[in-house]
Image 1 (spheres, helix red, strand yellow):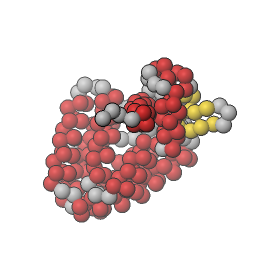
Image 2 (image 1 turned 180 degrees about the horizontal axis):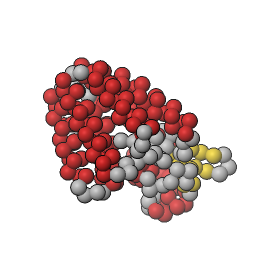
Image 3 (image 1 turned 90 degrees about the vertical axis):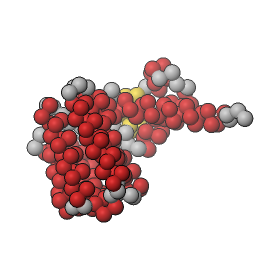
Image 4 (image 1 turned 45 degrees about the horizontal axis):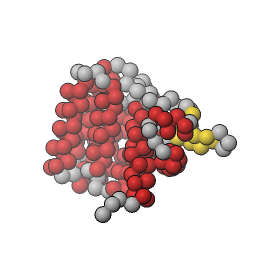
Length: 214
């Protein structure tokens, strides 16, 4: 049986969303940069319908915004908006780790330890795009351990909203410090120490106030 036209359109839009999302989160687009539909059609070999659907999807997730009579542009958070976003993440993530400390499984621990080792090995390459991807994967997997899909998805969505224009790692030491935090997070998760884990999460998320964010 052949694939329906509707299914092909849905797959095309989904693939374009994934490609645009990856570029938005990697910093390929500047905060506030305008996204021209014709350029997206050309650069991503996409159909106009798929471009429109993809832009609507990304707008819904607050990665881009629509300005009436002008078009779409990459989200550019104000300092106040970024403060509010981090504060909200802190509240949700501290709650999530309390659940994770009670619900974690041996598989959670094993997979997270492997991810920390992978990140540590990747530090030597100095490829920031790879490291950013691994960092995001770690956080997604870590909050999966809370065994609350809705909470984990909300945390991921908020983290992604804050990536355009975020202060990145500015030194090798900052990168290593971030992964050291990850290793400590796993140790506390394995020990089931929700209170200490919650405190560590608070420090990890708010360290940017002292310098580059981990």
